[in-house]
Length: 378
Image (cartoon, rainbow, N blue to C red; front, top):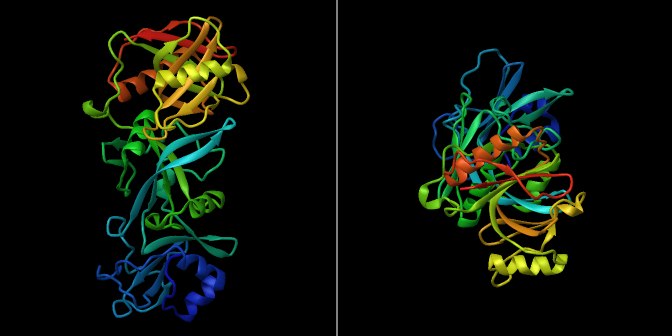
């Protein structure tokens, strides 16, 4: 919940109504006065709305700096500058159910303006919305338009050992950075990017799983997948050892690339194959998540697991001659690949950014029914 109470006037009350005022105050937090820049303190702030007909901007002020007003005079005193607003970020691992199994994705949640929001007319009422520049950068509400794993055009991500930053390349947006632990950083490097969620309905510093899920379910957040910019620092790369084999695997709904960790010389039962893979991974203290089908609609595509500490991901696939275990550098579900060249281009970008390896030569090899698999020595 944002502002508990604010000073208003009769015009604000009549324009917004009781419900509209409640929804607006839930999206504002009393941090800095948008007139003098000083801390607002504990007293109720003054709510001011500058109405430009097409949209309006609501902001918080010291009562002595600016009295409550709904300014529809056509003369706008000032809008809060995006760089003067207080903002809050946090990073997390977001669990998503895809293809019948749970996947973990790195995510930054951003509230880009605690003391000021944009209002737009909708069905004779006013509704809070993020700056349209976020949509121009490629962010969309959760739903069919959100392509996780496919980078937006208007932002790039930078991953370090201690933080993940998203730099927007659309005026007037800024760079938002969040501190991360080792597990989130490793997951972001493995995935080759990070999800970003932009919302005024949440204070990321007070984030809970419940209110994040509510914001996603009600469309109060814009999201997008932001690809990593440049290679990870050399000390943090997971470069395959010389002579290792990289594996590129895809079908009409999934693609992954990684390093071959091992293969069995003969067909084992599924249970024995998973036990063999766990020993090869070297799982200790039960930190491997339970094995799940890689794709519930493709039983023959094998199994998937993740190390809960490092967020490393593993695929166990059965081929005509045995089982293969692959540690994935990156994977994307719901991504359709139309040709070998498109798959190779995607894998080349992942390998370059994730490991520093480039110029590999792919050759066809054992695969699962309905999928294509290429192998390359590095």
